[in-house]
Image (cartoon, rainbow, N blue to C red):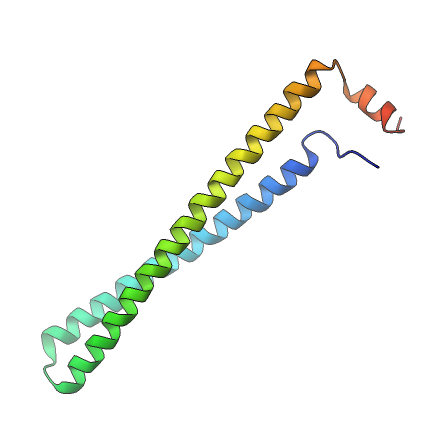
Length: 117
């Protein structure tokens, strides 16, 4: 069984989490912009159009806004959870390096024990 190089496996996982966070942040920015646009349009319609159809449309937009806020809360929680996972991985990597350092191992010893020169 091959042991990954120090920091190798955890660094890959941290990078994957970082990539996911960046992607989510980009998506959240687009969602915020869309939500603001929808709310602005709804306010314009409410101010300028008075009819049964306008009321029905505003009610549907209101439903959309409620669901939009739920999705945004879920995205926010996911972002927070990914940030927590990144912190846990960072701490685990630090702990592993401390424990490995306590054994007096070096890269040369690690490679020798792994059958590599």
